[in-house]
Image (cartoon, rainbow, N blue to C red; front, side, top):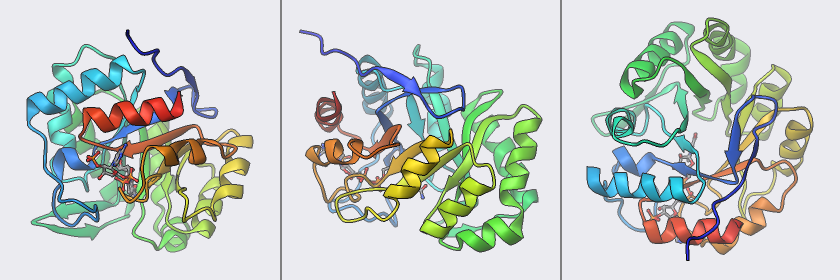
Length: 255
Ligand SMILES: NC(=O)c1ccc[n+]([C@@H]2O[C@H](COP(=O)([O-])OP(=O)(O)OC[C@H]3O[C@@H](n4cnc5c(N)ncnc54)[C@H](OP(=O)(O)O)[C@@H]3O)[C@@H](O)[C@H]2O)c1
């Protein structure tokens, strides 16, 4: 029997539609400096293609990547040439990962460079969603660095459909919302619920809401997803997995 695919619904007022589950692709390109309970193993091309094909069948339509996820963007650009499915892609700006180390640059110049590079790597004309990949200094990034303004300018040029922030502090998420973010990526899991009111308010205001770390970076199980999905305002939960089995369990938990 073929399982029913997840249905899709609007991601706030972005004009994009998403399923309750999205696929996080850290592990497509990075196995160093990650905090998972078991060592990350980067999948082969055929394993990654099988995962994407399975995700598509299950109704998942948003892939989450970032320049900070090692070779994730580069590999995804190549793999998507071999996938017949129509995917939405969320990527980020501000964090780089080279030679096993993270560094940050939130300047408008770097934002432009990074977005142009993502367009090239991902082999697309427009990026669906680009988020600020915060290092934790959310307020400084939003008040002094001009990062969100730079993303808005690139959106106005037609290079991005929706912009926003993957914030690390509640105050940062609130400020990004007040500064016109189209999408927020917030942490929500059994041990971190402090963003719950922000998430509900953001969705009510028409902002798209993506959730990261719903499984507390692998320290939870698929059962936790129904708990997270039960919060008002959650549009899609981005779960990182390289396992077809886990992907199926995660979809089943949200069906
Ligand atoms: N600042 C940011 O923007 C930011 C930060 C963190 C994460 N993210 C995004 O959010 C995504 C998720 O975050 P995350 O990877 O930190 O945390 P997560 O989704 O809470 O956990 C991912 C881990 O859970 C495991 N897992 C997935 N499904 C499972 C299941 N059914 N049963 C048991 N284990 C399961 C995965 O291992 P297997 O591969 O073995 O399934 C993986 O190690 C990332 O991929 C990324 O796209 C963004």
